[in-house]
Amino acid sequence: MTRDACSCGEYARAGSGLPAIEPGMPAPAGTGLDRRTFVTRALGLALSVYGATRLPFEALEAGIARAAAAPAGRVVVSVFLSGGLDALSLLFPAGDPRYAALRPKLALDPATGTQFAEDARLYWHPSAAPLATLHAENRLTVLPAVGYSDPDQSHFTSRHYWEVGATDPRLLSGWLGRYLDRVGTPDNPLQGLSLDGRLQPALATKTMPVASIDAPDSFGLSAGRVWGEVAERMLDALEPIGAVRHSDPALAEAADAALQTARLRRTLAPFAKGISPPVAYPASRDSFPRRLAGLAAMLGAGLPLRCVALTAPGMYDTHANQPDALASGLKLTSDSLLAFQRDLDARGLADRVLVHVWSEFGRRAAENGSLGTDHGAAGSGFLIGSRLRGGMIGEYPGLDTLDARGNLRATSDFRGLYAAILEQWLGADADAIIPGARGFERPALLA
Image (cartoon, rainbow, N blue to C red; front, top):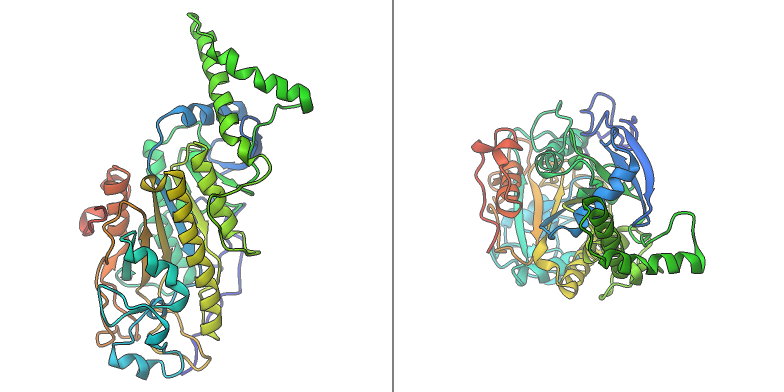
């Protein structure tokens, strides 16, 4: 069997700060949003801000400070596995008699993996052992065959559908972006944060500002054009100034701003020379573990984040030489996600954060002639969090009911999952955010 034709390396620019696409493919959500770059003086964050063209930077800084003083809420973290993760490797069906016949060279040995508790036919890929650990703790919910009806096997079209939360190639706002349009504020770009140095399309809004950050470990408190001992003395004076009570509303607001700034300074002080997480993250040249460590530190510092999106390491478009390529990316991703969860535990933040891990599709059930697998349909996804029920959403469909192209059939729809996250985790009206949401079953997510 030969591999499918794939022009995955032929790209055209989609717009400033957005992913590249093939010619003729759907424009990514966020196309047309203006991007401005600035450094927030109060927090020392270098941000690219989208969708806030009418607000001066000073207003955004003030909005971040006000939002940081509000009660902390729940956070969604979206993690993208680029290229189409092979569902039949993440959870490989060693107990299915057709598995070895379809994959005579790629079939994994069950002795190398951990058996999946909800279906004895399935085993975790050895590189996904940290995910198996979280699943055993009821902190990881698996979707073994998630997708949508009439699946499109183009990377760009299928990814677009997942990012906008609908099978609509013309939609230019992300599903998390539309959530922020309903609950966000016009002066807090940190409410939607892309940790990729460019806008993640799932965060693309219509009206509210969102941001991307180049380096999550480069935040601290600065004092504008003042530095050294003078700056330290000036910053030391903020808290006593803020502690003075005023009857004049303007002075009271200024004092409150000074007090909040002082509190942030005290909180951020340990990170001035870099992040020192309470747990060990994997050592890697890839930025993913560092970005997750920075995210945990930001949440611990009280920064007003609501929705965060980033891309995991690895390229899962494994048309050739799949074993090595999949194993390396999956191991770093799994190790990093386990470390992130342990970091949140250590900071007392685990109950606030839900991580959603997804890929644009799965792979063909049969291996090809290049020691790889071609584009498929239903794939794997999972949720991580301490409030989850754990277990499985949808069932493993087996290899006896493949579709006409030899792909796994979906047993859950990503739009129903999004609706459940919006309603059960974020307390939002999913019907107003996900087109046609009423037609999709919502799985129960939380314990």
